[in-house]
Length: 321
Image (cartoon, rainbow, N blue to C red; front, side, top):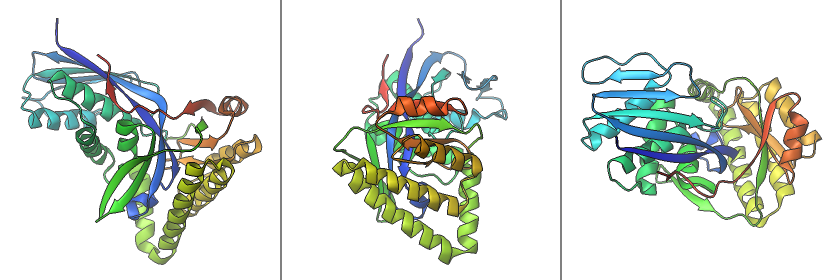
């Protein structure tokens, strides 16, 4: 029977600090119990084949003799090829991906997928997927996929729990924090794609064109993020929600929200959320609402938008077979 390994990894909800984290500000996100599963099987031919339930067409690349084909799955194949070279693995791999995470949703589906693939590959070749090693590998995947990227999605996928990202000596460092109360959220999907690379580039262009204004917005987001951490650590969900609302407004000022995301955020507040904001790059994707009753909040939104409840995933990426 061919050798195989299987791993799962959680996704992400961005509580505070997206975009600003790329400019030296901190960020806070939660790992979400909506996960990606990857199964990797060793094959004899020198191929990388990837099948995903999120894409109608897979990818099959005979890497010893062919140029890679154009495919949204190729960045995963390219990252996997780098791993194979790093560990001098010269056989082939079949990768099968199944995911609960909506694509282009702002929930770091790419980091979740990369973490599951990387953990499964390391296990397949007999390497222990240590958290620090896995985090660096997944961060490399993210930069390959999105260009400029934060460590927030990779940290949520690898570490689990509530993830704090801050800058030290011009490097992003990550750690977990412990909230006084359990957090639960409702997630509503706008139906519009969140194109991370495009949105990050747009914000960068705006930053270069009006640096004084953008630096003040980023500074305000940094303050909100620090206050949001204090509120969550102390269990003050009312204040945490108010700060989420402010963060959404600042992201809108950056130009990454739109009328659909604003509409969802206001609907969530109307139906009792402590606070609501877009999560991730923006432009589309999802909105999260902090609530004691996320199931009811999601139910109230479900007539208009795909909505569901989610809790913190305390476990990060792990090998299951």
